[in-house]
Length: 542
Image (tube, rainbow, N blue to C red):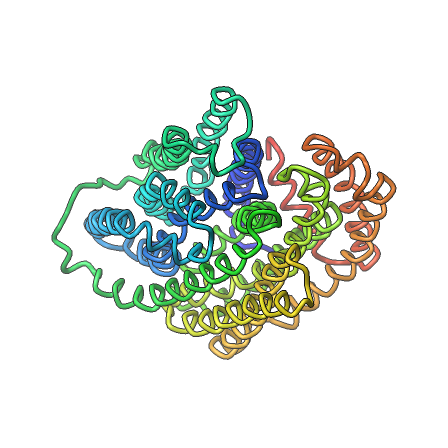
């Protein structure tokens, strides 16, 4: 299990991991302060969550799929042009900016309709608040788009750090701004009636200002690309038509994913007011994404760039090796993180909720998402391998399949509630678990399709490794849960407040990780040696 270009990938991974960790931690602090402003469970918090999520959803529709699936491989290939890719990237940025401006304007015009898609069955007063927040939040579409366009270009040029460090600017601005709101208005504003137009403008405006700063920070690093960016509206002759053909499938894929997400949140809004709903789901997803982002993005993103280079050169054997190597490396770290978060789910959830009871209910949502963590990491590599070969059609079909399963499981959740099989307090958790089931099935199908395309991807090799990691994670999770119970469980001091919740996580984590590594040592897992090398490259001075 050796790694080609060990130094390059190791340094890139270290930079990405450090940036992602700081970004995610400050993002967690941002969410903690936001919860103090608007609460975690209630009509007001869900109204803001619906509105603030819309820019992410619309941006995903018009840009994320295209950037991930198409732009990075195209920019890598453009580097071989006589001008180093200058003409191509200038045209691409001009076109991208125009599309983002138009999309932002259309989204603002359609704000009431977009809100109604998610919250159409909510009380009128809650819908009105969500629409008011949406007018302030939807301009984020432009800034999210510019951030992603610039950041993916930097990544394609092997300038990996800024893309992951830039969100810290957003988080710092938001933390300071939300804290000012608490001081100005004398505490939490959890009721619908608390939100007057000036307060809506301050919270929504600060949220958008942070995203704008995040995009602006990346421009400071543009000179490192060696590219001279200039407006160019002559969009013919450098392969943009090929991007359009490839992006067609990813656009349809984004539409399907967006529709499935809207449906999930619409079902979850049934519980809004007194039980976990959209805000809790987003906070649980934030916790879920912490290990995923730090581990998968820091290790997987450099591999994706290398995969694209190997695929472009027709080196299929190297691509197969990249797939196996990256999945085994990701799996080692992710399974340890999964065991840790599972054991500490309740105290971790207490950090983002207002009471022990809310934390217990939110922890079920988090556990529902965690069931799909490992499969999502495998999908990251498998899906991006298709993209590296310029194939966006196949991912479209297995994503459509996943979206159908997500809708079916969300519908099944509301049916279970209506038939008194589950309580309303468990609706969001059931939806989260359904998403994990859908993602796991999608990953199995995608892996089979890639296996057929490449004539094998060393599946038995990395599946055996995942089995070892799972066997080690079981006693590790049990040990961590035992520590939680010894600390008093759901009625103990770890659920008393935000700070004790964080302290509980800090106590549980080393126990889980110690047992996990010890179990793998007993199993003589070869991945331990590789993981040790990765960790050493992350240490200062390496």
